Image (cartoon, rainbow, N blue to C red):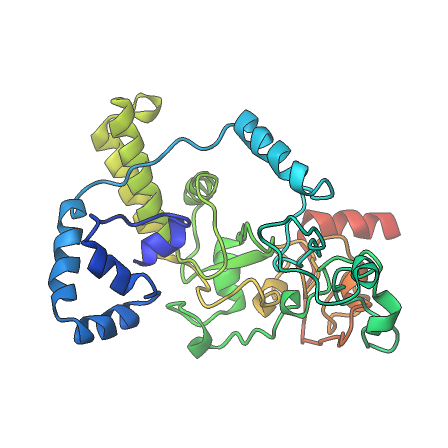
Length: 347
């Protein structure tokens, strides 16, 4: 299930349909616990559910063609007939309800219970907007204005405690373990670089293989390289099988040898699997001059390099955000090519 959760989002796990009586029983069951409780009340449900799963056991996953751009445009044209103000390029974590209603012929909305003119003046509920003195602006100040969710509290980084017990690393993070790899992997969701660690110095040949592999996978905070390698190899193997050919003409034996080499590589290289996209940068990121300086809060590189080595760098947007508090460290080091360029400009 861990691989399913990691790499197969939006996948439906199919089964054969049961009788109408049993389908009705589990219709409102959203968890395995709820299904077990339903089976206690109706003992036959367990047997029926097992039988419905049998036809799909050991069957390979099947993929369906994604919607074409033309199909998406056709669907969107239909949606715009209902609400011309919608924008398909804008996505949000939370959907704000747009007031429709007021049409006496509508079969969906309930009739208005209040004054229609007052209803038409109602605006959408606004997002949080920073105000003065580390407070948000009042509802009265921003109601009726266009806002966005970039200051949503859950987007703000939570503190990250890099201790041995707080991660799934098989070693305690140290400066030397960071230098042994000198590489990061970028999260595709939060765009924060996450540090790679190794007890032993990694040779340049293996670094090149590491880069090649990371280009083939999409890493997100919380994943491990074991999960990523297993999923990547499984997908590549199935793709070659479907195409009845091998990528770049390599034989199955050569491909298996390459896969084993990558697996061996990640026996020595680790990433903190307890990190989440809500957590700030790792403190070990700033323990060497291996990496370019980025904002400690959001990971963006457009920052001013601190004049002292006891203050973490922050971008302007994070500094003016509500509740901002600058964090300090000891012996912080800001390096990488970007740092050298900024240093040269200042000189």
